[in-house]
Length: 68
Image (cartoon, rainbow, N blue to C red):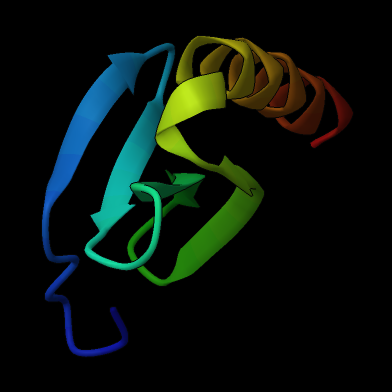
């Protein structure tokens, strides 16, 4: 990620991006970018809890921007 290669990602809305990690039971990491350099980790999870994790990440993202 540091070199700009984020791998397999997709936008899940509201500025949140999902990074899919090919390991175990479908691991996912949810993050947002603040400018060019900063990546803020919101939460992570597995495929079975994907919709709940996305909702949680969106809540955390909104809170991050509200506090900034």
